[in-house]
Image (cartoon, rainbow, N blue to C red; front, side):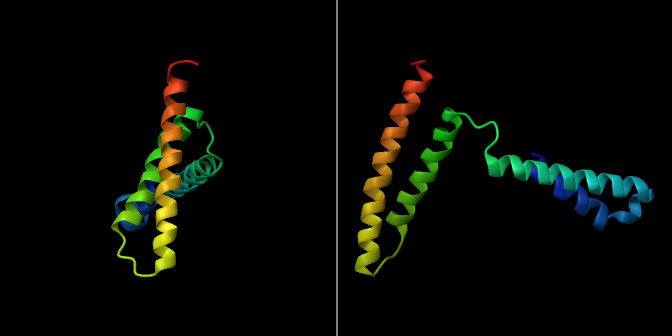
Length: 109
């Protein structure tokens, strides 16, 4: 949420600065937004607070997206078509494994 809100605060003050006449307060808000944005990006980059379950829940759609791209792409090169076949089979096997592991984790084992 702060990743979206922080730039919006800075843009609001930059674009609508005439409405906000207290320059010190504006600077404080922009500085706070920059700090919040930076901290959030650091947490995202390090995947801070991401559990095994959350990781699997996010990776399943990621892998499904790779399969979808291969299915929807208008490919002509035989080598790239072969790559897509390998991606589809490999990613599907990984999705199946992740779903099974997620069920195992959620059942408390």
